[in-house]
Length: 583
Image 1: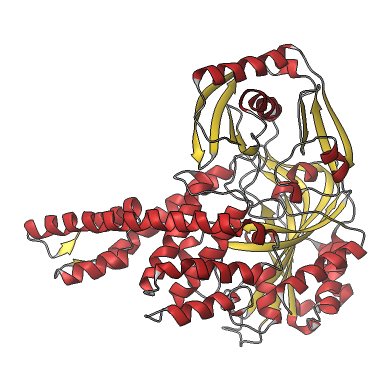
Image 2: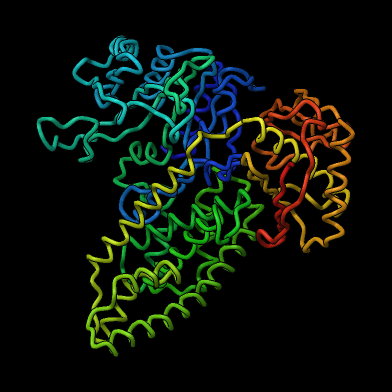
């Protein structure tokens, strides 16, 4: 069964069970400084899990485009992916454990025709914060899973929370038995030997965790996630996702073009190319910070491995075409944006080729220092610096070193690199701290101020200005917008003055729900129109701003304080960035 068929079956199944199909949010989240990318289907829905009314109702389903960066350096093995699609269904204070499990079991066994004997499940065993999940246990038995295939585990396995704070709860997870023999008599779904593959996770969100511990949410929610690529692999009887139709055309082309046969490098090229295509499609651009840095890292790692395969880099446009063609049925918008996507990728590749040359020059300096000091081994820190600063692969450093009768201690390098990975992981977790999509008083004010800024930029610079992204913290706002030239001091002052005039005018902020087509006809502006459901929320500020937005906002602009632009700079090609504060 092809991936697109699995996705359509999923959405249609839950639609038949009263769920509204909502569009995927972009992979780069709006107004959420806690993460660089949407990493799960629940992320864009946090305000609604906390009790805000969703315009499409209390039962929702969608596919969410996701990027997870933790395992970039693991891509190349038989299972890790950076980009993936998460299928999900949600109950916002509607049904809970029993109905969720019954629907999941029905979908797996009736729609996907997975034999019931292939399914094992896990439940939360209970602790001082939450009792043992007897409801899930009894429901699984009722639908037909025998006791011997129901396992209980603690918070490490069967409790879900994004980061340190936020909505959370016990979960029940479904596993597919591959038929491989048990690695030991104790082998069970918590084992990573490969016998059991996790296919679905149903989270029963009824708690909120903060620094004071756990408290009950206003409503009981269900949040589920089913990985599409993994399910396609299982249903197609493949050993890896790279053998499915999502990757196989690119993998075959790379095999045809390569001069050196390295399957890990082919996987890296295919995976990083697809991930980069999806990030660029949703507005991402290579840069040295945040999500732009991740995109740059993906593209440069892809280029390095094209070189390892000794594939002519002039073939890259054709490889991009094949990659887009393989997924165009799933993401038809790629066809309209293909030329722009190709330009961004090829431009970054060209820049990196120069970087590689700089790395080679720096290597010569490192090698000469080693020789002049009478050493036969290049210092591990120097190898790491070549990788971190110049993007120079350690295996290339090792190869060049051998040509000059020098050695690289790769074991010591791997130790240093793992320490670096651990620091990066901790830093990533710290970025999560405080929970997702915080909606404190200052964030709400800054969110409202982005609407005023967008309107003021249109007045001062022209109607070509459109929001390209924003990032909000309690201390400041950052706003990206389409514009090709650096703003003059006079233009910045005009924008500041206009925003502050609208603040002093004490304009009311109003909200209404309407069909998406009607909202567009009234002149409401939005980013990524395709991500919005059929019924949308429109926020208006007096008669100067009207935008599709999920909120929340202040009631009146008089609540905002004094607006001040601190910096205006380039963000990427054709996109400028303003950093501003409210005093």
